[in-house]
Image (cartoon, rainbow, N blue to C red):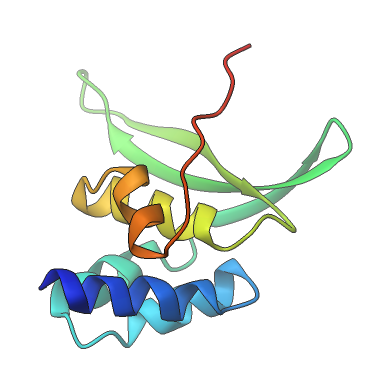
Length: 116
């Protein structure tokens, strides 16, 4: 995917109101690799209320060293967060595109989360 196409896609995704809307748009992307990655993620998200926040998690299984399936849970974003958070997560986890590069494509500044 050329950079101008990536920028256009990221900007269009950022206009969506929620993760499901953005994921649906990614599933029908003309770029086959992006569409395949989005389709592979379908059904792998879960909501949980933790510490008063509604959080969106990516839930997936991988085989461990012993060959057993092990479930993993990764915090993606909170409900109500700007969709850019999901978009950056998607391109980082699926294509190793740095968050700051995705934010830059959207015309935004990436702020590193504070460590606790």
